[in-house]
Image (tube, rainbow, N blue to C red; front, side, top):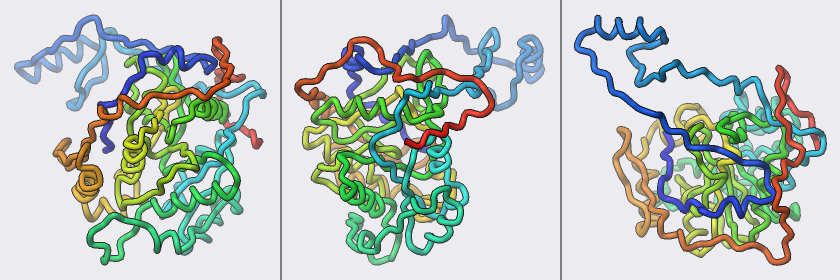
Length: 382
């Protein structure tokens, strides 16, 4: 279970900054009244169930009256009218032990976004046999594993480095490709959702991702950007389209000219974010587009088998505290150990627009259209 960060800088002027971007409207909707109903006997509870005429079990925590109508968002997709554009920066997926599932690869294929998938040498042929474009399977050079800084005091056990070594290879590979930024993704992302008009609807093209890239490129001081988890952005919570100066993880857009590289056996996403924030960079976490991600320890392969099944969560939480004792500490929550980070120190980091930009003050949906139907797969290859 990932922990949602609650201390961050919520931009109050986001409507000004968001000009020229796709329409964004989400309202906070509070219930008119909430009641707690107590039942003295089981019979009383069953009578209540009969009166409500709603499906309830012993696990039901709350209901709406009248019964909340389930949304039909799964029937819809945000595609484009043919004028949309694919992302301009390359996508890299870090994968281990998940050749058969390939959730992120399948997600990118379904929206027509090209990618490379980085695997260790012993798994190369297993992935090459099943990946849609075998030439996009990249082998992680051994030197990245040998030279990786695990930030582990006892590094003699031969344990995995985690995904950081492969992420460093992706960083260098993108530099060698001549681009300014690159995306690096975990391999357990089920889909991407546009959050608009209090609805979370999957995208079927890469147009919205391209829009976010263009937004990041407006600023001279954004080090990292990424997508919030879909489960953390409640439908009626009225979130802004982005927040600034918090951790970015699982799906990251990274400036290639940053003076850092990945390090640490655990929590390397948070560590990279904190190092950038401490050096006065900004980070952007988007709510306008969300990532639907399987929780870390619910899926076999990756870090689940390497770390958490054997070690639990104390080691990873303790390592972050040792890396950043000024802002991070270990806490006990939800029946296990977590790290807790205070991001309030970084509220003073302000976005800086590049000079000479001309930004349209009207919304620009970049050709995105809402479609309804059975087959939503997008075939764009540009």
